[in-house]
Length: 221
Image (cartoon, rainbow, N blue to C red):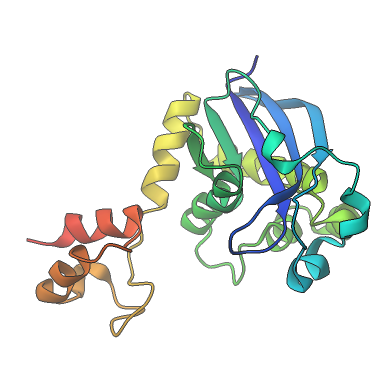
């Protein structure tokens, strides 16, 4: 079984998300990139889908009545890495399993900082403008999204040339550490230039993300 999959879910909502559709592609090589074995499955979440989610993925509650329960989802045996665009959402929606996450959104922001958008759709237009519109007709279905993510991953691999999946994961982890404050009275400022007492106060808070916490720790004396 492959150690890595490109993975995406559609869910009931952004908050307290329960999966209603999951899709994956096996990553069998990163040098060169090779993917295969496309898989998709819909699930019954046991609760209503929010209007905002309906407007995104167009999957109706009544289409899921006879689908297996969302709680029955399991990652393929042997999965060590999941790759996705803003992968934490998908990871949390499936219960935060013990796997390493590789975030193509963080890597894209790091590699192409001057682009005005880093959504999957925007990146596809940047890389494959002549065919992007046709490829995006089914965007926000989980299976379409993993195929689009594979195109973005290919561009990332061409740039970074990691020697292994673990090397790619380490690059992703580094890319996820912010350099500017994402919120608060110092929003937008370089973290290295934020006053030390404010950073120390932030580090005492319980709701600081692990990546922001790392950035604060690295720049606090």
